Structure formats: structure tokens, C-alpha cells
Length: 118
Length: 117
Image (tube, rainbow over all chains, first blue to last red; front, side, top):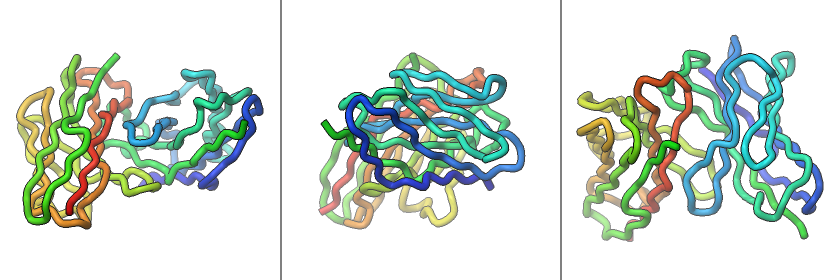
């Protein structure tokens, strides 16, 4: 079964500094990968997704992620964080692997809590 | 974009009562709807998958008699927590995939916070 690991439970970054959130997946082939953001008490908003093609994916709010097959990673990055980026970030993999279609739902990592220092 | 709405956003109930949470896709037809449960400061755990007109498929360890799921139409799924107990207190989030579009993307509701006294 597919699994997702987010090694960092908490990350603290100064406002204006760059950010990288780590995500590793376990799947034999290339899975469908996602990054979601959750503000306190809210649902999830999709930041970006990777299915195939260009391994550097651009998302909303200035986020990007790079798929690296050799490292089984899909790390999320942002060049300069804003105080409004403080939230919980979840990496997820399609449970069907790479069939897509959302038929089987997503498996989520445990999340990384991002704290922004002024 | 695709919007998923949950109601109620929060609910408080007494132990032993039943609570129903609705999940609606407002501007699209959902092939499949998923129900997740999230404990404080933890990840989302998939509880069950429901397809319109079919019985829900529950994940291992989730009591189907406890968490009743009904997917009456392509735009509505409901989760009923029966005979709720304090340990059922949690944040419940539904999500939906878009019918006829193989994007692999799920759209999430705002979540419903259940507190059982």
C-alpha cells in the first residue's frame, strides 16, 4: 500500500525566509502526489499536484514542489514565506497509486505545522 | 471551482444521541465521496468511501453500524454518528471527486467538529 512520510512535525521559519517541507512516499511506480494546506479549524485546500511530466510543479500562493523519483520525494518549497502561510501542510498520495480519478481516496502524511516568526 | 459544503460546521450533543453530518457538492456531481476523521493535531484518517446508490466501503477498524453513511444522490452524502460517545468527538471532513473527470483531485469540505458531552 502507498504511504507518505512527513519527517518534520513542526517547522519555524522567519517571515521572508525560504521554506522547504519534506515529503517521502512509498510506491513502486510513480504515484499521484498532492500537497494540501489546512488553516486551523478549516478544511483542506489543494496547493498543487503531480501526475506526470515536468517534475517541478507550480502551485497556488507561490508554492512549488519537485518530484524526485530517485529519492522518492515530493518536497514543497516557497522562496519567501508570509505570515499568512502559517498553517498545517499535508502531503498526500492517491491510494490507487497512479490510476487517478480519485476513486480510492488519498493517504495523508501526518502533517507539518508551519510557524512563521516575525 | 468545485465546492464542497458540510453542515453543520460544529455540533455539540449528549452522549447516547445520534448526529447527522451532511456533505454536498454544490456545483458538480461527485462520483465518489470520502469521509475522513481528524484527531487534534493529527492527520486525516479515511473512514469510508461512498458511491451514489451503493453501500459504503469502510476502512478496517471503522464500525459501520456506528458510522452510518448514506449517499442518496450525486451531490449529497451523509454521515450519521449513532449513539455517540465522548470518544467520537473529532473533526470530520468529507471530500468528493468529480464525476467524469479523471483528475485524481479531491475537493474537501470545511469540516464538521463534533463534541460529545
